Length: 168
Image (cartoon, rainbow, N blue to C red; front, side, top):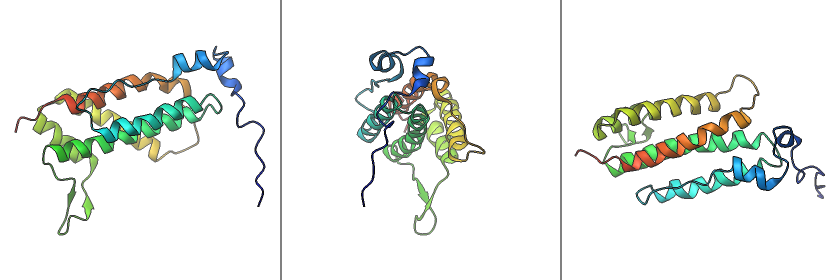
C-alpha cells in the first residue's frame, strides 16, 4: 500500500513566525533547551531527555509537538523518582508478589522524607500534578510556547533529585 507523503509535514509551522521566530535557527536557539545534567543523574534520564530535545526541535514543523515534549518531560519525572527510590532501597512495588506499583505520590513522600528534602517534595508533587492533568485531559488544548518556561525548572528538579544525598 502506497502512503503519500503529506506536503506540509516538513514545512515550518506558521505559528512560530507569528511568535517572532522567522528562522529555524532562531527557534532552536530560544525554544530547544539542551539539558546540563550532573554526573549522578541516572543515565536513563539523560537518554530520555534526548527525545525531549528532538520533540522540541520537531515542533518547528508542528507547534503542538512542543506540548508532547513537555508531556515526555513530566512523565520522565516518574521514571526518575522510581530510579532514585531504588537507589536508596525504597521499594517501588507492593503486594504479595510485588505485582502492584506503588502510587507516585507515596513514593515521592517516602523518598523526600528519607532524603530530608522538603523543597524537592514540593517540586515533585507540583510536577506530578501537571503530569496528571496532561495524562487525563478534559479537552484538546495546547500550552505551546507558554509551557517553554517549565523546561528549565523541570531539568533543575531532575538534577536536584539525584543530587540530594540519602540520610541512611
